[in-house]
Each structure stands twice: as C-alpha cells, then as structure tokens.
Image (cartoon, rainbow over all chains, first blue to last red; front, side):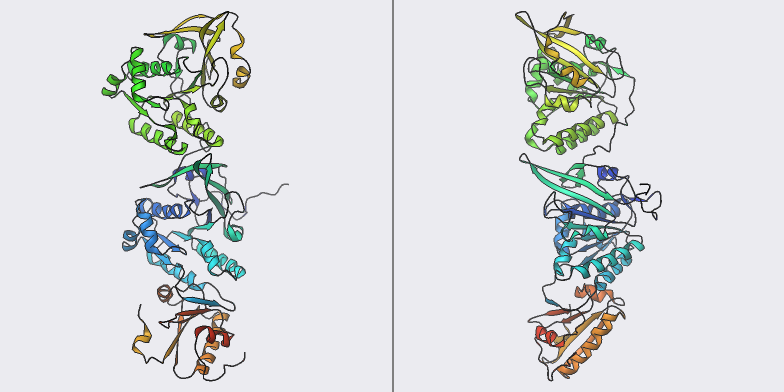
Amino acid sequence: MISDEQDPDIPDVLERVRTGVHAFDELVNGGLPRARTTVVGGTPGSGKTIFAVQFLAHGITTHGENGVLVTFEEPPADIESNMRGFGWDLAQWRMEGRLAVVDASPPAKEELVIGDFDLFGLLSRIQHAVKSVNAKRVVLDSLTQLFDHFIGDPKVLRRELFRITDTLKKARLTVLMTAERTSEYGEITRHRLEEFIADNVVILRNVLQREKRRRTIEVLKMRGSHHAEGEAPFTIMGGAGLVAAPLSSLRLEQQSSMVRVTSGNPAIDEMCGGGFFRDSVTLVSGATGTGKTLLVTNFLAGGVAAGEKAILFGFEESRGQLFRNAGGWGVDFAAMEADGKLRVFCLYPEAQGLADHLLAIQNLVDEVRPNRIAIDSISALERVAPDSGFREFLISLTSFIKKREIAGLYTATSKSLVGGETASEQHISTLTDSIILLRYMQEQDTMHRGLMVLKMRGSEHSKEIRRFTIDGAGMHLGEPFKGAPNVFSGGDIDRYSR
Amino acid sequence: MSNPEGDSPASEILLRLYIAGSSATSRRAESSLLDLQRAVGPKCRVEIVDVLASPELAERAGVLATPTLSYDNPDRPRRVIGDLSDAKRVLEFLGIEAKEKPHDL
C-alpha cells in the first residue's frame, strides 16, 4: 500500500521534448520525456506517420534538433511527397544534413529465415544515421511492418527491439515509434509492442460517430510523470499537420477579473450588479423568439459604443438576416464593420467538425483580437456534435475565451416554448459564469416574456423575474412578476444551483 | 547499385554475407558459409561485410538482420537470414547446385 508507482531511477523532473502539436504537449507537461521511448498506436489512417514526422519537423525547424526517420513501410520517396502538403520538405532537410532517412521498407528480394538472427544490421544503420546528422530525435514507422516482415519470429523481434530502444535511450535519443492497431478500442497494438519497449503510450483514434469523423489523441501511459486524461480532439490540416484542441488540461485557472463591462442594456447591467465581468462567459437561454439574438445585438453594440472591438459568430442565421434583425432594433452592424469595430462570421454548423469550428474561432479571435465575442447559438453546434465532443468543445472554447480576457456571450435555444431546458444548458450551466433565462410566461390568459438572472458568479444579482417587451428600439424591462407561475422550475433551478 | 557480377564470368557466383562483429551467430554463419563455398566449388566467391564496421554498406543493401546471406542473381535475387546451419536448404533456396554434397552439420 505504501509503494510508490514511480520508478525509483527516474529523476524528479524529466526534460521535455516538444512535439509541435501544442495542445498535446500541454497534456503531457510540455512534451515527450527526453531519452524515452514513446509508442504511438493507431488504426490505419489515424495520422500516426504525420504525427511522427511532425515530431521530427518541429525539432528540425524550431529547436535545432536534427532527426532520423526509419521507415519500414513506405519508401522514402513516398513519404517525402506525402509530407510536402504539410509544409515539410524532407528532401531539403536531408540535403542540409538535418535529417537522415533509413530506408527499411521491404526489399523486392525473396527472403528465407532459418535459424537465429539479430537486428544489428538495422541498429548499426540507425546509429550511423544518428551520427551523420548528430540527431536528437528518432522515429521508427511502423514497428508493425517490421514484425510482419519477420512474422515467424516474434520472440526474436521482441528481444531485438528491446535492444534497439535500449541502445538509443542510452544515447539520450528521444524515440517515437508508431504501431498499428486493428480496432479503435481493442488491444493497444498488434503484437502488444507497447508492453516491452514503451515508456509512454499514445493512442490516435479516428472514429465515425453520428456520421461525423472524429479524431482524438489520448495519452495512455507516461512512465514517471503525470499527464492529462481523456481524448483530445484534433484535426489534420494542410500546411500544419496535426492540430489538437486543448482540453481538460486547461483547468479553470484563468484569473477572474473584477472589471465590469456593459451587457448593452442598462437595466440588465443593473440586475447583474453592474454589468458582466470582463473575462466571463454568459449564457442566454430561451425558446425561439424570446429575444436571445436581440440580447446579442445589444451586447455587441454596447461594446462598440464603449470603444471595444467585437466578434459575432452566427451559426443559425445568415449575415443578411442578422444585419436586418439588428437594423430593426436600431443597430447598424454594417457601419460598425466598416469602422473595424465589429466582425460578423456566419458559419454553417454542419460544414465541419467541432474541433475545426473551435480552431476556426480561435484563429479568428487571435487575428481580430476582440474585447467581446458572441456565439449565436451554441446549441446549433450541438447538432453536429457527438455527446462527449460537445462538452469538450465547450470546455475548450470557454477556457480559451477567459484566457484571452474576453467577455463572452453564448445563446442556447430551448426546445419547448414554455419553460423547458436545452441539453446545452446542462452542459454549459457549470461552465459559464452567468446565466440569463428568457422565458414565455403565462399569466391568466395572456403570454408575457420574462427575464431572470439565474446565476452570476462572484457577484450579487437581482433574483427577480422581470417582465420585458421588445419593440423597434430594442428590449424594455418592466415590473417584476409577482407570484410567478411555475415555468422556471421543473428542475431548472436545481440544475443550475451549483 | 553496382552489380559485381557484371564484370565477372557468367558462371561465377558471388555470395555476400552480412555479419555483426564477432557475435556467436555471426561466427557460426561465417564457418557455415566457408563449408558451403567448398561444396559449390571454385566458381563460388565469398565476401564478408561487417555491418558494425561498414553501416553504409548495410544501408545500401537494405540489410536489417544479421547474419544475412545475399545472392544478387539478376534473375532471382534472394536472401537467407539466419546462421546458415542447414546448408542443403540454403543452397536449394538460392538455386545453387553443389558439386559435392555439403557437410551434414
């Protein structure tokens, strides 16, 4: 019971080698441990070779660490042309002496194996290549192919691979080896390579979920150090390679500021105790037609009026529709865009996966550098998301917004017109700092609209349910309901009360 | 790659053995190969390459395993991996006829 799981011979802090997949490096405390062996397992087409070459490319271009690529499967010429699309010119690096390639792809010759053998041929070729470019990183792609080559002698292969990895580790080389898997959630690798040679195991997955392809990267084992758990979504992008979306590694470590910014509606500011916090995310939830997009419009206009820059990501309505809506409430989006104070991006939720949406949003935010951002609606994105993917997306997006010290506003559409909830609300309620509910309220035989600030993290707020009306000048808050009917309960309050 | 058979008499057989230093299997393969050469006769030439000393030759030939015996017959290039202890099977696989029966080992 007192035994420590860490190996005794591991120094307290392992030096890290960055892979160039930044979000992945964050999951593993800064990168792969130096002078260790990592097995990257994945089904065919999961991106193993790209990840492996990216690890080499990043070392060469960013850290001055040269590399050796040992290819067991594809001939070097094929890999070189396949990788060009990611902006990696292997042939050029080879000529510059920054990369050496060991071609261990199967020869055309017929071969017979009888009796004992070793892999000193391979080892000495790798050592020779390492020496020739003074390499610090070595990739073996893929071990499964090597095993298949010597299919009759798995025991010999294990012994020999152990010798190879051991020799490379002693030379302080950081080794990344790929291995094939037959299924996404079955045994870790064919031949169970990871059991005897890997200090670390990383899994790449490529799963079809609700007709959407979802790629994830997961750290299964990292000997002697901590790593974040769970599958982080990633995409493969031309000119970049693997791009992962940062996940749970971003715990809620953002500094919360006490600076208030306007919601765009003085009465709501007052209900919130003086406005939204600058680096907070607010959820506006309500049925269709309750005024969510109006709140968004006010939020953007209020920021621009205060000299801020704003971005709107629309996932439900077209640009034209959004501009017309805003015009109907006396807000001129076109003029704001012309002044460089506002950018409106309309994206079709189904156009890409959530990981791509996240990256698109992040890229635009970093390009425009706004003070506030609105997403209308977040529930439209839920349509394209497999369940777990949506929550991860929200966590990532919310942490990103808060890290940038931006005020965020999400809208979520509830399915039922009166009362009710959205699945997004369940996901979001604990993630966002503030929640505003917009609801249709029945009073005797007339229908009214009601607004309530349900949660306001770190601040006092009004607990009243306020009546409101919408006209050509926007939203007008009126008197609180007295003895409000039961439309906000039915579980709502309980759900949000943590 | 140069083909050493190109400038030799057509009947000559060149067998190249890739070994790793003086490991036990390498030495066994070397002595098996000499037996084999005797059995085939004078047209059989033998070259021994130590991959530890000449990794670039191993690279050029694409050798992974040691010992590897390579017979670069242009029609049917073949390789045998292992310590070559079963001379009969080795010769059969390479398609080389022995003048005398190889030693039973």
